Image (cartoon, rainbow, N blue to C red; front, side, top):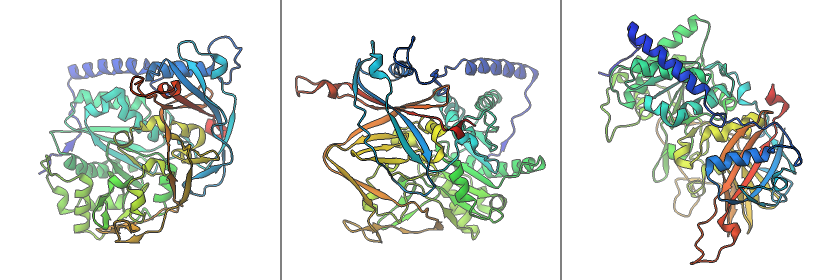
Amino acid sequence: MAVLISLPALPSKATRLVVAILVVILFIHTRCMSQAERGNITITGKLEPNNHGPSDEEQYLIRLKKQYGLTSDIAWTARRVRSFEQGSELNSVTYIDATFHSNKFHYINVATPNRRKLVTQELLDIAVPESPCPRQVDASDFLFAVSTTYEQVMEHEFTAVKDWARWMTGGNKYGNGATFILILDMANDLEVSKTSEVLKFYGIDAYVTSSTAHMSAINRYLSILQIIKSFSTTLASKGKHKKWYGILDDKIFLPNLSYLQQRLFSYNSNNELYVGLPSERSDWAIGQGYATTYGGGAVFLTSSAVSRIVELPCYQFEDKGGPGSKRWDSMLQDCVSKHTKMTMRVLPSFYSPSDNDNYSKDTDSYETGIQPLTLHHSDERHQLNPSVAHLVTDACGEACFLRRYRFRDNWVLVNGYTITEYPDGMNMADMPNSIAGLSGNEQAQNYVIGPVSIDEDSIRRKVLFWTGRRNVWRLVDSARGNNGDVWQAYVKRGAVDEGRLTKRNDEDIMDSVIVLIWEAAVSALQ
């Protein structure tokens, strides 16, 4: 029988005193965190190169040098970007009738930079779909639940919390109306209290509890449903009624809550509904000509579905953990499909079995221009810090994140991820049609098996073809200026100097930096 999860026991007077001391220490620590750690820098606006003191670009270069160890000499170019809303049609590429590389690189000595070479001169106008900025989203219909460990929460200066806060608050210190339940594995009272204070500091409306003994991830996640059921009753008594309950892996990032609302709210939340949100191909089980998914670590349920599932006999399953154990979302699907008529509705993001697998399987998902509902293990799969990359949405809205732009001179921007040059040419075309069940060199589509039903999006997918050279600058940093502008740094690392073996130009050896300064839209400042 699974170990139940309960509220922490009421601490003794001595324990409460220790908790109070720890809370004070934590408060001082979080208040003293540098602005850089929270994604803010002191950039006051557009400074002319003859002003006294460091220019905005110099300040940002100092930040990049300090945090990312640039080579002593770099190639540098910077452009301001002004976004304007243009409809909400979903395409996987936006064509820009301008050249990207018209603003040539300048060679800068990082220790003694020439201010005139750093200063941003050119303005680039880019169309973005209509969408709110994260702080403008009302997510009060949602309750999100995650299970993890205390160590994971505290790791790397609260990286996990910063990621949750990015989509749970959008920088709004009062949150976005959503409720967050966090279950820690075998955390003591002090750890539960400290975790609560960290979440509160980042603006997350959270209820934190802990298992009374070690539990496998499966048992912790299945127990979440019982806590959701009880806690939602308490919320309802206070007038806070939730329509959707999201059960998420601790590595799930929700980059576009307004789009998620649009997709989920197309269903009737009064019904028993069970929805999975696999992010990319790795979140599917794919065989020879078939595919299925268990939700990809992101499952959404309606209130009536939660009430039904916690009463099922298989819900009492006890998992010992260890090698060979199934994932919690797999066990949940087995339980639901065996004892109910609920079918998982699937809202795919980057990958769908209807895609031509000969193209999708070898493509970097984040470079496809698809508007995702979820990111899963983005740090491990794509070496991307999601909260840093997502900061640009403060200036251009949620739908501009990972938006793909093609310029006339064969440069491609994937906003928040990469900037790529194709010197020898490139082309984009509609993804070739696929035929279910075929494999090899034929146009292959995977049959969908299992208790799932896919609800496709309406995004028109374009495939990028290229030959020859491909130069890639990857996002390493984002920061917000005091005026609301968002600064991005894309870096292409220089090659190791192997002059004895091969002759290289200085440009090949030094780091190359492209800075984009996204001007804050008026609506984003409201």
